[in-house]
Length: 313
Image (cartoon, rainbow, N blue to C red; front, side, top):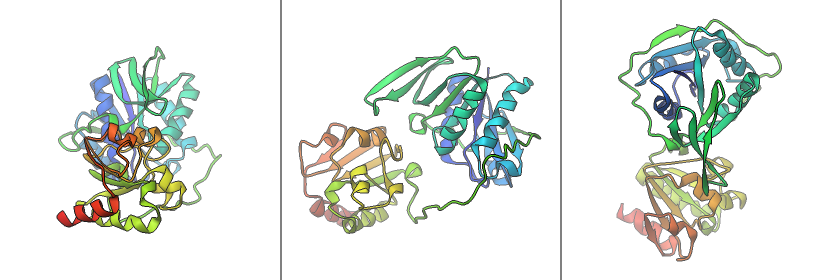
């Protein structure tokens, strides 16, 4: 049983979620191949070779894959399955924007169902995934010849990024569908850790009252070396930018420490952070739902508690 994992990368380096996806693949079978598609891939390939548990790195170095356009990458993945030189029983990718864009096309081209955002591997054909904003967990069994799966990274502990010695094999095929083109991208930049990779996250909600008050969280986060997030209510109110949103319709995070400040705890927000190792909630409403999932709860005025916490740090 051989599993193909599609790497998430920036050409020069691998994304952390690739390591979590490999961990899921290792729970399915021992033979794991990693596909790295892009251009100028020396950095990403070197990192891929060192991943624990990878037996082979497939390198598709072609201009058609420079920006991970799904119309081009999906036919590449399908060609590897149809090639038959290796029988792939599963195709996995992180449940990222790229993974969610590529794998549905792969599943359609292979005429199989896709299983989305698994958080647990029960067996080679049975998986668990959250439904209803994480309020229920569905157990899904598939008898598809090739199982196409996206992996919620927060559900699996990452494998080691060093210690491996995978073989490298070039993939010659270049699939340019010619129906889409890369125009440009606007990337958010910050001196703080990216939310999905941060070990500590400080998030603010409607209780922050306005965007200027987020300065308290920025200052606290800088003391902790943390990323800063927000609830949808804070984003919709215009307090902060959309890329800071944590929740079902935002970013899914699972840091070592999550500090929720002025967040009531709507189910959509909880779905994006409840897998955090330790959850701390600060809210003046003692009935706030966030306290039901918090490991530590402080019923207090955040405008008094947060500056005091920062002073103690």
